[in-house]
Image 1: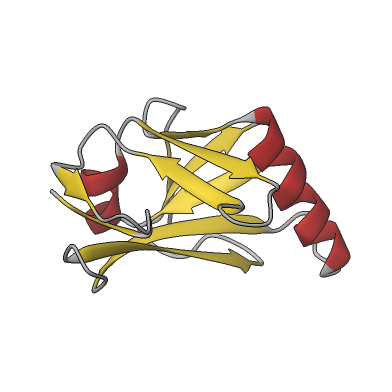
Image 2: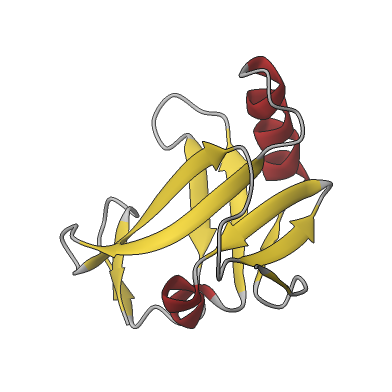
Length: 115
């Protein structure tokens, strides 16, 4: 059983939503989900992990943003509440970027943070 929430938990920008939709379609799962998790590691102690999956699992929190279904596990929700996921296409700093108001500090690579 999963729970529903709104974009106050996490939201995607229009660019991120379009990119995730495109990736899900390319993988043959247009009804799939984007899982966003926070795991230990990285140079600041915590890092984001994102994965495309078929459906939510037990205890997930589901948010719909920019037409994409995003799921977060309860533990990760403590760290990502209020975050925004963006996507940038560029040679150097391209890819998905998380703006997280809960991050006390982050590293220069932008891949990890501390809370």
